[in-house]
Image (cartoon, rainbow, N blue to C red; front, side, top):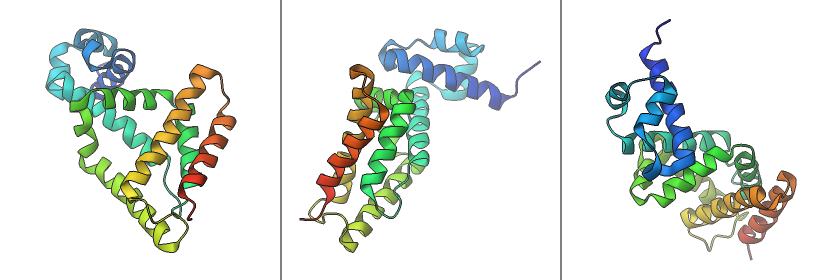
Length: 185
């Protein structure tokens, strides 16, 4: 049975994500991606253009999944950080893709696309509202504070795999750290 173009594109993207998770951009091989997707290299290039664009698409997917799965409710950064750590604990591939993106400086452009940028802006606005309401320390720049919260959540999600820590422990540590970070003085 012949696949539709959308199905073939999705299979290529899934195979690419598996390849990038294991090898990053530099070590990933287009021929392995195409073979694992059951597609030709020509089809891969027709859909994505080049390996860098394919990587950006895979990173964008990981960022969007994380952004959509974990929102900031009522500017509550403590609960947001805990849910984010839990998400990454349960979805380590998304975390690994984002780590590869940060290692590949050129791939930061994946975060500047419309949908990803809009998610980030909504979160920054939620922080601003919480600061205006007095529930989050207003001394922080909202964007910088959000990055610190993300770094805290992702560190503990990463630590869980290497130290054998439980999800519950990591989430509790993240919530406590962020509570201390954001509590108004």
